[in-house]
Amino acid sequence: MVYMVRRLDALALLVLTAVLWGAFLIELYQHQLPCPLCLLQRVAFTMAGLGLLMNLRFGVRPAHYGVVILSSIAGLVAAGRQVLLHIVPGDPGFGEPFLGLHLYTWAALAFFGLLAYCGVALMLGFLRRNLSPRRFTFPEKFIAIAFLTIAMANLVSTLLECGLGPCVSGSFGYHWLWPIG
Image 1 (spheres, rainbow, N blue to C red):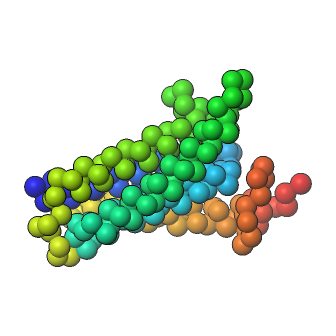
Image 2: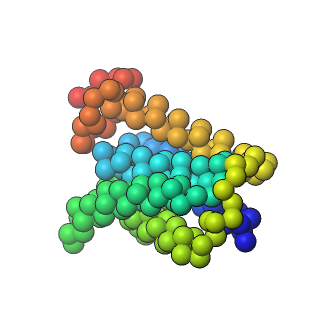
């Protein structure tokens, strides 16, 4: 049963990594720079991913799920705020829709899914048996490297977009690469 939870954690981290890579590729190829609320959602996804990564590396623990839960709540607040900003009929929303929904709506659904997953894992009590650190399996190592790579890419991208100060809402360029109007 513990191995199943470990595999589910790896699968959740893989999906979360795919979400971050997808948002990053949209930023690069469709030139849709993330707004400040989008950046907060990326930070929340990254923090939730770190909680899942700690489960894979150090053993499944309630504290690691706590990191995922708190990060998902913060991300759900940011995504929910963005959904509410664009809920008015006729508002085109921010960015292009993907499969009929904007990325912030997908983010809200993903954060809700992470919360549900952690709740089920905690309720079923799989956590009592696996408290020792373990080495990554090959697929887990691949997922961890892909996750850490996109986390670093997002950090660099955010520094280029915002500089060392706060991100300006409505900025449409990279602060450190060329001046913004």
